[in-house]
Length: 490
RNA sequence: GCGGGUGUAGCUCAGUGGUAGAGCGUCACGUUGCCAACGUGAAUGUCGUCGGUUCAAGUCCGAUCACCCGCUCCA
Image (cartoon, rainbow, N blue to C red; front, side, top):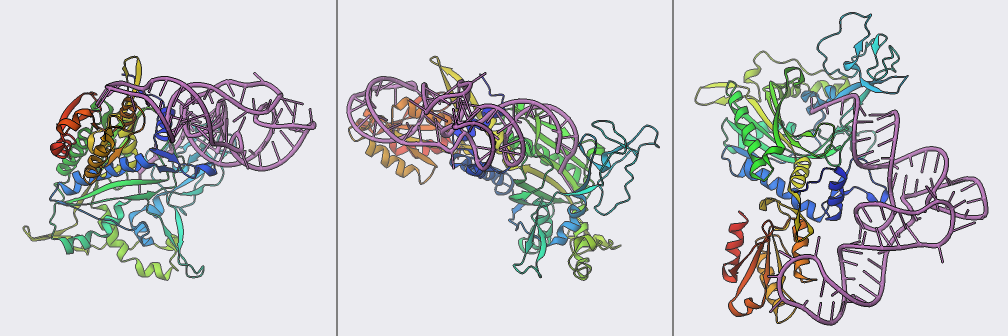
């Protein structure tokens, strides 16, 4: 089995078959932005549907949500994104290499190097770079003044310039869930442990984008915030890491291309108690293994932060709605019974729940499913290209053909198609030789093809041809729908 | 942001200053009874973009945009 190993081949495949195009291509393209074509949008929608089915539909303890992308600016103050998503960067005058200020180390003649680096707030000036060493060229103290690199996209809300307020495109969907925690509790009779799930676009002004749709500035996330009682968080963390890992396997990702990667202590985000990535072995990049999804134990950090944010509103208004002039209100002593706390009826007590967060990249997953399904095999001296999509992910489920355009076969095939398309995403084709039509569907990843032939005229049966084995079976037209539904595991 | 590479038809690519090409794919007609058949015909390009040199630029020069590889970075 020959397997593609170059990103270029994947890009070409995506373009050729109408899966993924570069954004604004006729204008020369816009960096890091991509569009999903006719087959791509079906595939991506199927990935989202499969996620939603596994995480929401099949579970009694998870509900869904769809939040707006624009949110109150204070949300990002409370979450830490407004400060800590803004890294300070400086540039070496000698070799023009950019480095994060907090990652620079002192030269050998300076004092001991600070062990722990952390993110730095904008405006927290006072950086002495005179003894810092450029990691690229080794020059000491040759840096420009630190500059802020804001990772959130900004825009103005309000048509009047004077009343316009700066708002941000969300850098993650998670905060919309935390902000709606109270609403969901009050309206849906959920009880801890329970989760809230959301799929949607997020935006980050990444310093560098990379590798096709793998890291883009506009991307789609599927996130679950699972709220649980403190003390049970570690067990739920285990539950979700396995649940999520198996989801990829069930949808056909090969086991040898999937693995966990535990985050070490000093790699953890400031809010996280534990984090593990699910990685896929992509055919690009320095190390092939790249993150598809992170599962984090976010503790009670976010809800506690939003309780502080709620008390900061007046200060924000008084500051002229300028986030950089606002300090988050201090946390109340009795925060455990604050407005975002949960009352446990059994134990008769209030607490801020812990949160386990599986956060998946939809675009990355879609790419992984695409890459993993791609296969080439030798058939009668010819190369057969095919996408071995797991049926629920396949953009087209069933293609319907007349064997030849004679003896009323097209009419019968057309009728079958019109019936089937009410249940599955179908495709009708009567152009060219039958073999060519089969191969076209192979490259689109269509699991099954139905062909009307001479025998159909005699006994009302059709052939159903399997993508992977190329084998055919005869099925009565009256049982066709049920047969296909069964084979497609829908 | 640095270094290297690439950009010509839908795709893969040839084309080293003198009329823009091939294979595959697409479409039409005919043929065609199960795995990329055949015949005939057709459509498709501001050669990434802008500027310069030249009698003449896909080709040389400059800038710019985009992508790939390697650094750097990566909640």
